[in-house]
Each structure stands twice: as C-alpha cells, then as structure tokens.
Image (cartoon, rainbow, N blue to C red):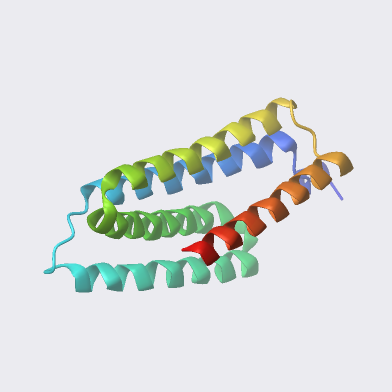
Length: 151
C-alpha cells in the first residue's frame, strides 16, 4: 500500500474541521435566518425530510465512487447543516433562541477543541483513553436515562 492511500492524523483532523465548518455555517445560517410562521411550516417540514435523504444518497455515492468524495462529503455536510438549522429554528420558535445558541456553541466548540487537541498531539488515543471515554459515555447514557425517566 502506498503513502497516497494512507490517512494522516493531520489530514483526518483537517477534513473533520472542514466538515464541521460547513455543517456549522449552514446550520447557523438557517437557524437564525429562518422565520417560521404557520405559512411556511409545510415547506420547512419538506426540507427536514429531504435533507437527510439527500445526505444518505451522498453516503452511497461516496461509497461507490470514492474519487468524488470531496464533492459528495461537502454536499452531505451541507445537508446535515440544513437539517440541524431547520430543527434549531423549530425549537427556537417553540422554546426560545437562547437554548439553541448555547447548544450549537457547545456542540461545535467541543468538537473544534477536541480536533485541535488531537491534531496537535496533546491527546493521543490509546487503551487508557478509550477506557476513560467509554466509561464517560456509559455514565452519560445512564444519567440521560435517569433524567428522561424523571421528566
């Protein structure tokens, strides 16, 4: 196998950051620019259904033609951003925009920070790191389940 086919830490982190930037910019655009009224709920719901379907099609196209992956993954990220933005706009119309702002900021901030730490080598993935992350994930799932049962 040649080096051309190899993935590097920097390359993976850069591509993940690029996809994060596409998703975040499209999501923030739609979350803040979309004014939901009873007149446009129908078209918004149509977009919420179409965006994930297009994203899934892009996964299949990327799998069958990896040479066009830069184009199809960008379309995939944009569709996911549209979906996230529309869902955020619905939630903001129902519960208020501050919750959506904080959720978007926290999600993209954590992912961006982790990509930075991973790319600079501050965090190295080994057996200990995997055990800690798995334990944290199990704790989060249990805590979420308990909170859901109390609601």
